[in-house]
Length: 454
Image (cartoon, rainbow, N blue to C red):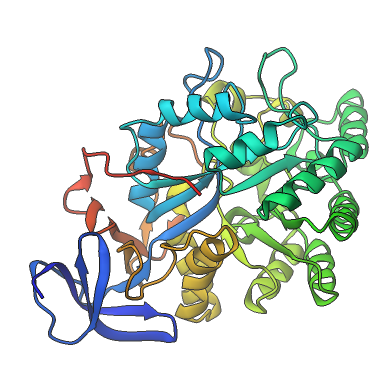
């Protein structure tokens, strides 16, 4: 067969482990794996690790911005950042775009906003809110969403028409019943809104201004309690659920226990929970503020234990960018809570997991690609195997560099990873057989990405 592309001589992460071999691509699909393959185009990956491209299952793109968030992060810069960071496909959250993605009309507005702007592939979450229980869930299913998302924590701006809204207990219960009928997964931001909102209000009124005080206003139990509540409702409704961005081992343990009891529940954590810790937050500043918050050093190491034990299904960026003015606050309680991180998932996770903690390459590929693809039924994604999309990230191990602001493809070049030495590099990213980033050529000027409609 005359292959379009062959990646040669790399250490390729296959389903049963890594091996030095060649991978051949035809019409955007992997068609052969073995030695001495030939093709019209050759990429010599000698000295590089060839991994499945990352499937980042938690990304916020703010396109359209609705006149409110037009300068946050659009598809052009957002997917350029993905390309440079080794993310070949991602699950897009139903917020912070305006209007939020909660019904057929808003889903189609989003699809139109991304037309001819995608450098990576994009699957969509549909939102669950108190306002779309009369037909909206089904409309989103018919429109091709891969899964659903809700907030048990307070979210959205009530002064913006069409912004996202968190669920109350009834709408969560009723929404779970409806989503169970679709067979899809409901991803949940699990924090106790009543308690965290009040603790934050008290701290603010008491004159607290630091990120450390912000972390203390969102204690561990305010994660654990809503995780338990969501699991109980999942048992009652038969809804498949996934707990987003778990930041404490106690939360992971609730998921592990429920899964052992037969509940269809999984969880993720984020790169930043495995990298930063509370005592360094105020030195970095509000650019590292997020929710749930980044907890202490002991918690960080306990979360690594949960990752390495297999209790956490995958790791995401929870890329949640904004404009610099929303981060540039003297009082941490007033700053936007969200981290720009999609460009530094793969390199940071490879360095911190594989190089520093001995994670196997197979586990690395599973937690960045195979597991999220499986959970959200992205059947052509997540693995280097025959018949799958030819999505790859080529990684140069043991190649430290210091991240600079000018390295970032984000519209707003702010990130808590700036100034950090990262011990591995993304050398090239390939989407369905087409290079979308290389160190030699930069990010592609083309837009070969597509929406994945389920």
